[in-house]
Length: 221
Image 1 (spheres, one colour):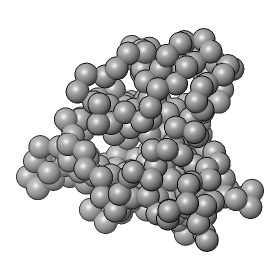
Image 2 (cartoon, one colour; image 1 turned 90 degrees about the vertical axis):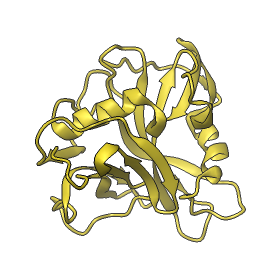
Image 3 (cartoon, rainbow, N blue to C red; image 1 turned 90 degrees about the horizontal axis):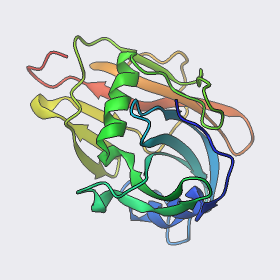
Image 4 (cartoon, rainbow, N blue to C red; image 1 turned 30 degrees about the horizontal axis):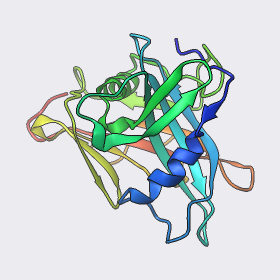
């Protein structure tokens, strides 16, 4: 169970993301620096208790229309070997000391726990309260057997695509959009998905799809 510490971070998560987000191909902002506000998110527990896992939702108000992004992050007490390209930055944590923050789509611990969430073996945790479930996050799975987690991660203008052998694909919606229906029917051909909610700039709540899983040809999940 992840413990949420009430302490300082230097720099803050939003400050790290302000520098990092414009480097992503799915970033919708222009030349102006992002103006970010926290809009929601959730956590997952690392069974080993070593890696912090957080799915942050932030809204950028720098453009003519606010844009909301889903940013999975992992926090580690030491660098992750071979993941230099996925480093978002380092922070000084008031309790835990130096923390290395990574784009979680490249971290095997986050990928394993995201698969566990979709399969129903893990539960989303509250972003700000220790040992509390986030009941606004819902996951569904209609496949058979475990979801492979040996993904190859590719960012494009539409988001992040995680592809496993035999073509199994997990698509993360980096730019979030409110969905018209609740509960959300699975996307056509999907075998799993994760949905959640976030706060709009006017203070109301929105719900939408965070991630969608598709089987590959010839691969039976």
